[in-house]
Image 1 (cartoon, rainbow, N blue to C red):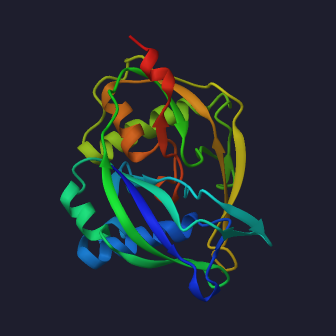
Image 2: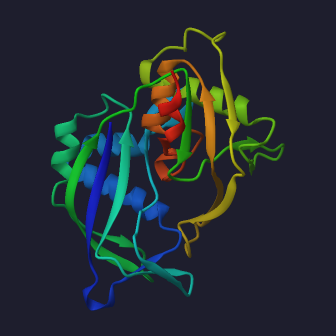
Length: 263
């Protein structure tokens, strides 16, 4: 289930700036709002999530913030607009439409860190209809796509969607998410599967937990791509995100106009 949230921004008191890297703060807001309604669900989702072969998946993702007007000042975003849009998506059956709309309705929360923060109030929330899923579709990232390879020393290497291993990683990741959600292996491993970026990916290095001992940097890539996959995996890609670190705001996608041209 995918939701579009319109946020009113209260800039009184000089609170009109956000850190450029705000993904972790957005993720924390989602957990906080969930915990106000169902603390056990939020705690379980945060600590455990869905498991497949010891891999952990939260099975939700979110977009970048769509801010109509802003300036970049001193590595911060100075917000000019009075409203902004945010999209959040959950794999179906994690919770109901009424549950999500109910807990987000008229919520007020601070977004940002000690150096830069704005106050937000949910003006409206609506569930967006899913696209018509097909076995070949084209997508645009709404938040950067993150793909990781493990080096011999155990550290992560972040690779581009054009890397030779991208297809293998994406296929395995979607099958793992299916197993985590459904509880069994994906049944048809011989089904056609293909992935290719259709424009030049744009790289972003995003700081998580900035200015803390836990600070880390994650590289993601914004691009358009074409995916061929079974319908069940296509739905997971759309609802739960593609690639890794989805619950930190990576891998949310939307369909492109090219899908309307398909027969």
